[in-house]
Length: 568
Image (cartoon, rainbow, N blue to C red):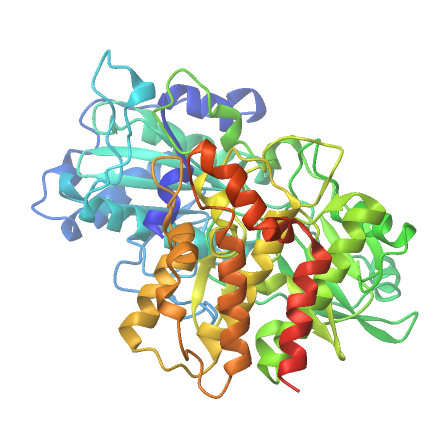
C-alpha cells in the first residue's frame, strides 16, 4: 500500500494554509479562543518510548477538543471490520465524536493518530530550506519509511471503506514533530512537519475540528435517515442490500456494485455506486450507455437510471487542485443502475467460455467504435461479465468519444479478487504502449491488446500450468505487475511480447488450443514494439502487412474464433 500510495501524496503544505483551507474559522461559528503555550506537551515528549507517550498525549490534547474522545487503542485490534479485509487495524489513538467511545472501531472513528518515535520511520521528509522543491521528493522511500506510509494508508483504507466519507484526516507524530494529512479519492495532502510542543498547530487543528460542521470534517451528509414517506417512495424504486466494505486503496473510484431488487418490474438489477471521473472529455457512464443504445450497439446493458448525488463544496475532491502549488515537491503525477446482473469472468466454466466472452466483448467494442464513436479504454477482467452464454462489456466510466483527441487521463482503476487481494487494473491490462508512455494517445489497437491480457491473466491465475511456480510468478510480475518508473513506465511488457520465451511449447495442461491462441496473440501484438532503422521499415511493412491486424476488430475476433473452432 505504501508503494501504491507514494505517487498520490502532495506536500508539504504550510500548516496554517492547510488549516485555513480545510477548517477555515469563517465556517466555524463561536470558535473558542486558543490558549496554548510552548512546552504544553512536555509530559509527552519526555518519555522514553512511544508506548509511554500515549496517555500523557491524550491527557494534554483532550483540553483542545473537549467534545472529542481520545482513546488509546494501541492494544485494541478492530474486530468489527469485514472479513474481506486483507489486513488488521490497530491504530495507536482513535478519536471519536461522542465523547464516550472505547476500544477500536474505525467505522465510527473521526481521526486516527499514529505515533512513531524514531525519525527513520518517518514517511515524509521536508525539503531543505531554500531548495527547489519541484525537484525534491518529500516521500521517505527507505524500507522503514515506506512501511509507515503503508501502515497509515491501510488505516485510511479501512476508515474510508467502512464510513464511505468523501475525505478524512489523520495525524502522524514523530516524537515532538507531527504532520496532518487529509485523504480523499484523489490522494493525500500532507502538511510540513512542525514541533507541536512549540507551535500551536496541532492544538489548533483539534480545536477547529471539534467545533466544525460534519461536512467540513468529512462526513458524507448526503446520507441521512429517511422519513416514513421517503422510505415508502424508496421501496418503489430499488431495494439495495447494505454495502460490504473492502480494504481497498484509498485512491480511485471506490466503486461498489451489488444486485438490487426492482419492485416495479419484479426483477433483479445491478446497482453501482462510485465517484466518477469529472473531466470535460469523459462522458458520464449513463450518458455513454444511452449513446450505445441509441446507435443499436448489441450486447451492452441498458442503463435504467443514472444520477449524480448532490454534494457540498467541502465534499469535493481537493488533492489535485493543489498539484501545482508553489510548496509542492515533485510527485507522480454518482450512482448507476443496469438492467441485468452478469457473472464475473473468473467464474468461467471452461477456457473456451473465457475466450467466447472476450470475443463477444470485442464485438460490442467494435460496434461502439464504429456506430457510436466511443472508445471504452478500460477492458479488464472486472469489466467483462458473462450473462447466460454471452459476454458483455461493462463499466464505460472511462469511455471517450473518438472525436476528442488527447492522451488517456491516468486514473487508478482497481480490481479486487478475494484470492489475490488488490491489484492495479490500470497496469494489469494496459497495453505495453500505454504502460511505457503515459502521455500516448489511447487508440483502438490499445484496447484490442487489452483483450489479450485479459485472457492471458485468467489463464495464468485459474488454470493448471506446466510452468514452475517460480517461472509463473516471474511471468505474472513481468507482464501484469509492471510498476511505473520515474513517471514513464516499465518496458517489461513489450519485452515479453517480443521474446515470448516463457510461452513456447506446452504451457497450460490439456489446453493446446489455448497455448496456440496466447502465443499467436503475443506474436501479433509484438509487431507494435519491434524497433528498426528507417530503411528497414519499408521492407518490414511489405513483408508483414499483418501489422494492420492489430488495428482491426474483425481480424482479432477471427483469431479468437479460430481458437474456438480448434477447441471443438
